[in-house]
Image (cartoon, rainbow, N blue to C red; front, side, top):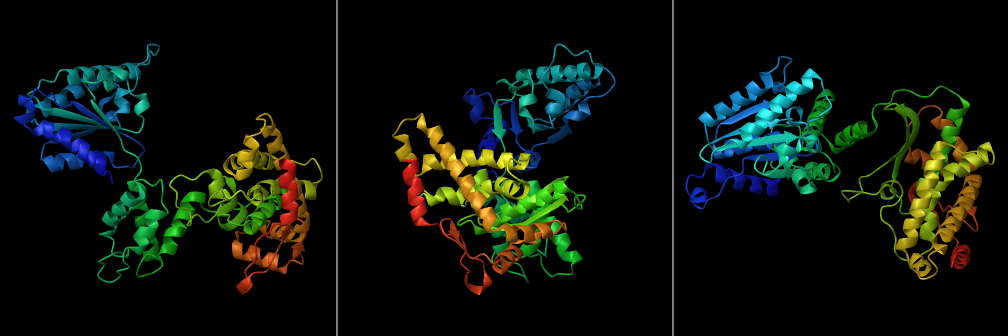
Length: 480
């Protein structure tokens, strides 16, 4: 999964094992390479693969192994491993978690343990500086915390080449999944003797796991296999993968909050937000809402991100919109800001004017950020930008204020549905979107002229908000 890095480090290895061409050209081969990046991305595996590919002795150790409570042990161990590597050159010394030995020195520490580690670091600096051209020993260090390493260790002449090994891309995630699926007969794949699905499961898994390391992907397939065995299934399915991803992201349900007035207010807040998200056009599909405790926190809204294709999504893309519209339609503002403003509106409608919480304050801050972004992206924002720049903040303030008023009307119209959903959340249940749509269908409210219309869709599915064009034109004219 790191093809470009493999090519670069292979060139370094060619210099190490070559006896003639580079030496005659007066080339000094690099003395060290540093692999750094997030945990589980294959830094150790890459170093081992290099040694095996070029058939050179490989001496592996961990940075923490050098430091002991007895003075002089760290320096002696560093000296010993370098002497052994020189006797077997060309060879590779691999120091995993090198930050345990090579951490930046401090002039203000009298701790004996720190002094012993620094003696080991000094010996490492001497050994890496003392190579002769004929020794051909390459030092490879791996760390998750490159910023903590001593500057003398990182200078050219010691670690000449530094490679950042990031989490794999979608294509590389698929390649990693292919490797780990070969020895797992319950994972369907292309060429499987019994369950050849054309790599559909691996392809989809690679698509929905941005940010996963190689170790994370291997663990995911392993857990899916365990789940299939426990349930007596012949193969692991995509539903099992999704179940495991959800478990990793939000955690196991740990019970609910004690019955109280704050819990009731929390249920109303999340109920209003959930209904607004279900009725918001072009929004990322809500999966379920809950106020049960997971990972020492209230669950809140959980979204289905299977339709997300970008590797890095902004928070407003993840929570509310699949993509920002640039069509210049003023309704894009309302559709986007409604889910962020209904929480505060619900608190004021159900608890009284002036009621506010940290949750609603955070949502309103996001509404201001999103409003500013939308003004900059749309035709309306371009029109505003041509005017006085000092008016921009005034226009944003008016836009958010109007969205709050619209949200208040929305909460009043859907008050019954919000109350029903809140009562089910108080039972510490996970209320899925299908149940929310049934609650809306059973609601007596069907139309709200001037704001939105709730149209009943086909096959029993709830409709979506449609906006009154006359009212929107009036608001747009007021902004301009």
